[in-house]
Amino acid sequence: MAAGSARKRGAGTGRSRKPAAKPAEPVIHKGLAGVTVDTTSVSKVMPETNSLTYRGYAVQDLAAKCRFEEVAYLILHGELPNRRQYRAFVADERGRRELTRPHLEVIRQFPKSAHPMDTLRTAVSYLGTTETAWGGEPRERDLDRAMNLLAKIPTMIAADYRFRKGQTRRRPRGDLSFSENFFHMCFGKVPPAKVIRAFDTSLILYAEHSFNASTFTARVITSSRSDIYSAVTGAIGSLKGPLHGGANEAVMHNLLEIAAPERAEAWLRERFAAKDLVMGFGHRVYKQGDSRVPTMRAALEDLTAWSGDSRWVEISDVLQGIMIGEKGIHPNLDFPAGPAYYLMGFDIDMYTPIFVMSRITGWAAHILEQNADNSLIRPLSAYGGASQREVKPISRR
Image (cartoon, rainbow, N blue to C red; front, top):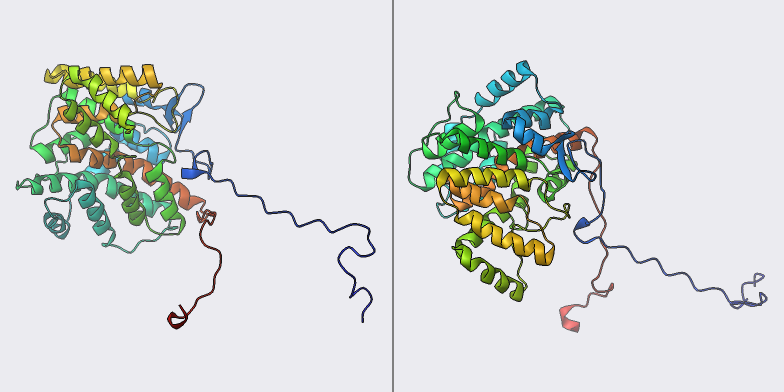
């Protein structure tokens, strides 16, 4: 027998062997809250000013001084355009707006009862079938695809809007701005400059917001070396949810349910008692108020003066006063955006597709950024199911 082979545990040592240390329990970050997964140069909320910035520019300054097309260029290219670059960018976008006849026929066949986010998701996916694309291709190719999406998504939304109402579609016009053309394609006319300016403001404010749910979805899909169309289709699916982009729709449904300012407080107290979420309030990033809200609120007030309908501002004031005063919860961008789109004349289920028209710029910028320095996004999970067990044939059960 080999020396020591019969030695009992602890024999000759004067002490017992210490039990093996248990592995540390993993720290769970539900919803990835507080987890930093990568770097980005596209946008940031500056903590010292509580301001959302795109490429270093405060979004409220961009909304005050720029058109949406200028901001789209900034997000995609990293700098504000000079006059030559702006003219070239605008001409490029306007020249890409039209859809092919087969694409329009696909949209025409969608069920009229389908939500516009579902039809838009499928229309974007169809565009991806017209070419073979993969992630990791040269940046110029995906930038070209991003421009196609920016130009064509409003046409997809407007065509579906007209078809579902049994109306003849309006072809895009190359002599109109991005926002003017969308109103033309939806309603057959361009509203006053004040309305266009308010719409432009909303697009600028919605264009980008770092690693939100839909943007992170796009980056996860891109990280597998999938293509930009797949990434944007997935992002649209994420944005549809009422805890993300769909919140602006939920806000307006709530305002219509309240209907009058004198009913607002009782309605809100009922929500408190039922422990229901009050849509349009709170944000994971902003704790002292969403920096985009004052700018969108000013646009809403302009629309209120233009329309002569002050109900939604009055109801909003009651809800906001109680939520901030009693709960310390501030409104987010969806709170003023919902009634603003209502006063512009859009159906409520159009609000989130409008969000897509804007956010395609941010999604595309992040897709390009992910492809430039890619690593597959593959987090771990903590298992909480049954321990490993034996499979028994049916005859033995």
